[in-house]
Amino acid sequence: MTAAGAAPIALSCGEPSGIGPEIAAKARTELGASLPFFLIGDPRHLPAGTAVSEISDPAQALHVPGDRLPVLPHRFPDAAAPGRPSPANAAEVIAVIARAVALVQDGAAGALCTAPIHKKALQDGAGFAFPGHTEYLAHLAGDVPVVMMLASDMLRVVPATIHIPLADVPAALTAEGLRETLLITIQGLQRDFSIAAPRIAVCGLNPHAGEGGAMGHEDDTLIAPVVAALRAEGHAVTGPHSADTMFHAAARARYDAAVAMYHDQALIPIKTLDFDGGVNVTLGLPFIRTSPDHGTAFDIAGRGIANPASLIAALRLAGRMQRARAETGAEVRAHA
Image 1 (cartoon, rainbow, N blue to C red):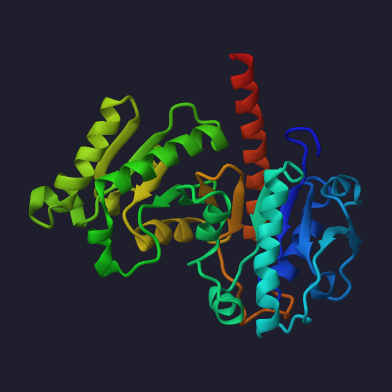
Image 2: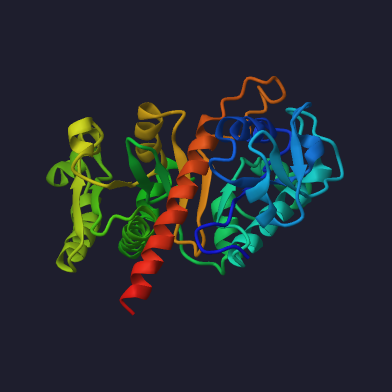
């Protein structure tokens, strides 16, 4: 185990028939040794000509030259066919995630960054029982409550509900669930982003935040009381705000993160503002997890044209979060 804050970042390989292997190699080429990370996966799945150093222990990644990709080998049954996932590989994709989590939990890796998976391929090939990465990671961590944050240098935003039909959102929103989402967001900003007193802006559910009940009552009867209760407890939480006025530059300067009520209300602004630089962060886990904010891109896999920008942003953010947790822990120890 390396010293706190010094352990390399573990990058799980994700779906080997997608763009994960390509962007992992490209990320190493751009970052070199400036941000130590290692890939967990099958070296055969990497693009031809990738310079690889196989390692047997994560700590060895700290000493691999910057022009070589450190790989902790995890053998898969099949070679990778770009754009065509093999059912035989599905179980190993899942096993790599579990292996990466174990390494982070025991301190051998300092953070986890996950390359994209293809949920249907995992369901078809291995009976994967989770909606996605986030839920599986929460399960591996002991079924802890988590929230998904999309983060970039321009915006941090959290959807209170995620992958459900828009028609189901009002029923899915509860005061208890919204409060939990807000508290996890506040705690995550404190622990992982070094923001001592986070400012949170909460979107309304309905147009114009319901406009006093003229366009829906959820804003007044559900969202506003949760916000008021948290403010009474000393948290800098405001809202519900009309979502259509929350994401221009002047508005964004007034908060550290926005909490939206549903998937597209959160993701459209960040993907418009910073499509290539957005990072998926799971808050609430006992370990750090980031991921590029895109999928497996089967349509371009194997063509050498995939953009590694979001993966690079995810790795860099994982490194910053690692340092923030180390500093927060040092402060806690100093005042104990």
